[in-house]
Amino acid sequence: MKSLLVSDGLWKCVLGNDTNADRDERALAKINLNLQSIVYPYVIGKQTAKEAWDTLEETFQDKGQKRNYALQR
Image (cartoon, rainbow, N blue to C red):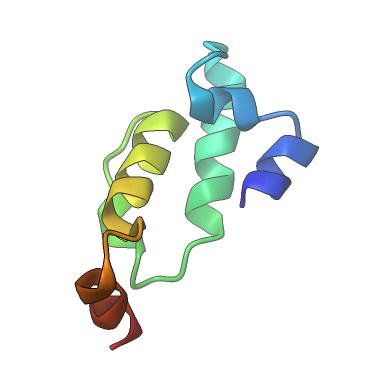
């Protein structure tokens, strides 16, 4: 996902360094369109690419062996 956003010049939106509304909408759309449907509820209602990315990162970031087990299940 990061590579896709970088290649389109949209990664700065995820970092919060780009405040252009059009680019941010495109970045958010790319994130949403590349998610599996089971993950979509985590980002529904997020207004910016940064909000969506931060939520996904917080939800799926490896937090130890117990989290790894839960994700694999």
